[in-house]
Image 1 (tube, one colour):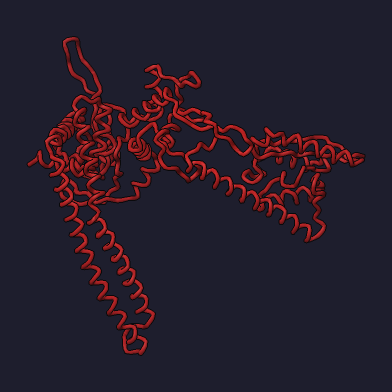
Image 2 (cartoon, rainbow, N blue to C red):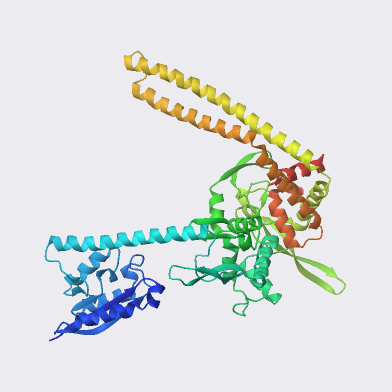
Amino acid sequence: MAKRVYCLYRVSTKQQVERDDIPMQKQRCHEFVADKDDWEIVKEFSEKGVSGFKVSAKDRDAIQEIQKDAAVGKFDILLVFMFDRLGRKEDETPFVVEWFVKNGIEVWSAEEGQQRFDNHVDKLLNYIRYWQASGESIKTSIRTKTRLAQIVQEGRFRGGCAPYGYKLVKNGRTGKKNRELYDIAVEPTEAVTVQKIFELSDRYGYGGRKISSSLAEEGIVNMRTGEPFHYSSIQNILRNIMYVGILRSGETQSEIFSELQIVEPEQFQRVEKAREQRSAEYEEKCAAAAQTVELADGEELEVSRPDRMCPRRNVGRTLLSGNVYCGHCGGRIFASTARKSHHAMNGEVRERIPIYKCYNRTQHRDLCDGPSTYRAEKVDQVVDSILSGIFFRAKDVKESELLKRQITSTTTTYQKQLKAVKAEYVKSSKELSKWEGLMLDSIEGTCVFTPEQVKKRMDIVQQSVNDLSAKIEDLQNKATETAELTEDIKAEHQRLLSWAEVYDGASLEEKKMVASYLIKAVTISQNYGIRIDFNITEAQYLSGMEMM
């Protein structure tokens, strides 16, 4: 009776498929079976583009089907071109091979013969074979990653499909096999749409779905498909750093190549930061970081407040989102609507008006003794008026005076902190010297402390001295780094001036973005008491001028 043979062929990459590696393996296995009088191929399996190193056997359909058939005795021999076609995972593949043998299946390679398990040497050789195969896969991966990193650092495209906004061009560059290689360049028409997508996200705070619908309303479609942009495609565009002109391969990034730049780095960073601050992960991270806030009654309370520079939601009719807090309990205030009825000439009119609601007062009344709701119109008018005043005064501020005042203020703050830290350092150093003196006394037995107790305390104080020393160095550096501070202040001032030109005529969505960038927190208390804390130092200063 002929022995029933299952054949398995596998290639890891698309290039191997195109090189006809599968037919080569198949031909060699057929030739091998032809030399066996009592062997007959009854079934063949082909895995195309399946990595034997990255993909586990339990996730490979062919291996799973072969194992099921082996368990019920549907075949007698499993034949592969080489044993590494079964896999290259050192912690898994040897045991897969052993499983087949234990279940009465002979495992053969057309090039390497039969894998037996007659003794411990056979088991050792089986393991070594796949350990070597795994090592080769790791080395190949390292070589590939290194070369791809070098390619992007040299400013050359690493291959694949061109992202939307770019096109593949031939510039006469050839590869090892003398084939002309593709370079990448900006596709002007598509690039305009990419810029539009970033503008909608940056200026209006739109997410992928809103951008998709806005583009569709304007009749802008994906030129490659002729269909409206899917929101997931827009999300991919917004997170792709290549639009800044940076090529990337894994963790490696190139410098900025101006000929590939479609959006400004600053705009990309703002969009990226806004997307991050809207994520659930950011909310969780901020929830773990407590801040001390002063309530309306003067009491201080530890609460978690996200450092948000974009609106939590950019829908609705309120100016603020995600940065409004209750002055009585310190909790979050969220935007909502309430029903309002009034009588007109033609009868009763019902409408919904925007309001701000204290979450604690609404859901946990015992946690807050303040009002539950505030008319959004009243709050927004105050905030809008303050922002307009800031922009009006920003136009009259001389940049030189602003730089002088803010640098002096910042430097003074650092100097005060430095003085306090130096005093702590001197105190800790004296304490360390005292314990060092006590160590000898403790060893001689003339001290109330044991050497272990003295050593433990010395370690604690020494760590404190080291930390204070590092803090002193950091503050000294910050106090002298005025050049970088100057550039930051100039950039903030120019941003204020650009907003000042458009704020009064801006849409609500645009005002939301500006308000979120400028305002760190708006705290509302009874009788519409409103306190605003700003993200930008100049805005805090200019708002204070209004109240003088």
